[in-house]
Length: 482
Ligand SMILES: NC(=O)c1ccc[n+]([C@@H]2O[C@H](COP(=O)([O-])OP(=O)(O)OC[C@H]3O[C@@H](n4cnc5c(N)ncnc54)[C@H](O)[C@@H]3O)[C@@H](O)[C@H]2O)c1
Ligand SMILES: O=P(O)(O)OC[C@@H](O)[C@@H](O)[C@H](O)[C@H](O)CO
Image (cartoon, rainbow, N blue to C red; front, top):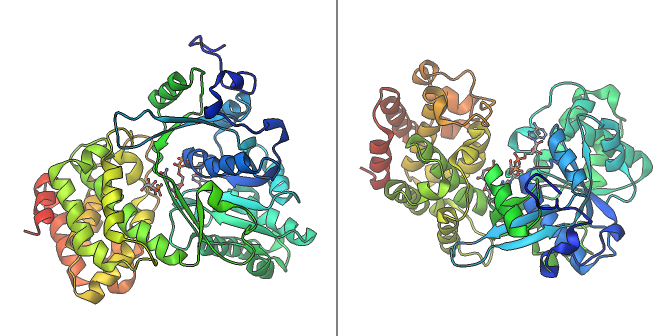
């Protein structure tokens, strides 16, 4: 029993949950075949859900997960107390619909990297592990400081070297919002190995290119940062106390690059996962339409003091700005995969953002702009330049981000760590050279960072904001193209 008088969610209390809401497979029989690095909210509401669906269909196949947290000891403690069971409550746009409640049973073990690095390497290298998934955020792919044993990337490299020595191939699936995430992951591992030659075998780089597979993957489900209120809500709906409960949107997508050897024998479709030969187009569709518009809502919303994404999406001027961005810049720039309808997708994305039932915040989406802006805007900016379309709205969004990060740090919540690449950009350095910040901090390609069609409106907007003009006027102007 816990302080609330409700029993805690764990294997013993699980039978108290309605049968339709809990695993029908036997938790004791689940075989672990997956290790996940980055035991955050998104993993619990996305990949763990897919593996839970696979276990419902194939309880004898090794789709159980060992989830590895980087430094979050409290999460691992809670997970172990609950026998790694947790609830995912999903909400759609219809306020009259009952939220769906599911206790997920796919995570069977957890490890804390900061405490048990060797145990993490051993688990990653174990023969029964066939798939390694990651959600370590955009910044997690930057060269980690310290020895290989000090970072999740380094532990993964050490484990892959053991797999090489033992002749154990594996599929490594990055599930972060990055262009070409699998390719970026392999390059990050190769760079790490190169920096620490004494720590790895000479054969590892070649093996990373052949026997370890890094298919790209595109993940899509909005999972807000979880609050105490979310956990109370989940526990109330479940009737048991769940310290790890998650509230997420009902929409769920996971597309994995179809390439030889990618667990093709698994019935991915039964878990709602698609294998696609056009992964580059799928990722661009999502990053250019969904994620870029999300960033637009986050920075415009923060500038106007709006806390929730849904309120930003329903603010008339911000909604007009988003509509203009999609119609004039993003939609004409995107190259869609066969069968996709980008206009319909853009409409569905706007509806998802506007759902007042999802407690997502502008502060969450606004984190780490220096990493996200290039991922979300570069392809659109390049295509706008090529097509002669002035990227006025993109320029305004980047100006709002630069202004907020340098002149309005108060707009960001405490949980928002300082953007790793913006520490040196102050209002003065920005005034001196916006173009240098675009190239050096945001790492936009030179032809975009020096494009007068981007620099003109960006500098105009930033100058106005830094001299104290209200952001509301600027957003309204950019929304109408005035
Ligand atoms: N939340 C979503 O809606 C969503 C949707 C699609 C994709 N994603 C992807 O998942 C990532 C994580 O999202 P989340 O909601 O779980 O966030 P979260 O804050 O709940 O978890 C972040 C995880 O990343 C790990 N991490 C952070 N910095 C790291 C570093 N430098 N090296 C290694 N690990 C690090 C943390 O330990 C934690 O496990 C996002 O950055 C994004 O790329 C999230
Ligand atoms: O998760 P991040 O930090 O990469 O980006 C914030 C949001 O844009 C993102 O989480 C979306 O909610 C998600 O990509 C929807 O599938």
